[in-house]
Length: 98
Image (cartoon, rainbow, N blue to C red; front, side, top):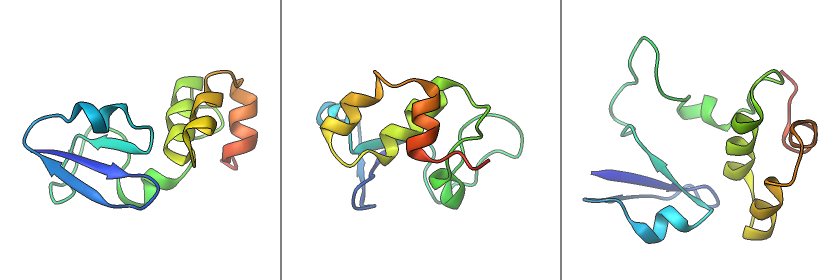
């Protein structure tokens, strides 16, 4: 099963196969690890649970900041603007207290 989460509402859905529609929509993210399966103790994968909503460290790569910003974007216009932002702009707009 493939699980998706709506970043606006927090709703989750499961599909037997990847959904082309949900993959294209900016407010839906694919969750590779089902919530009920604990993450491996060593390596791999991003944070889940409360950690997933925290911004990356200030020293994180621009790509990590873009991924986080997309998860926080409120609409497609904001999502589209992320590509044109510098890492410093992303840190300033989306957090970066760490």
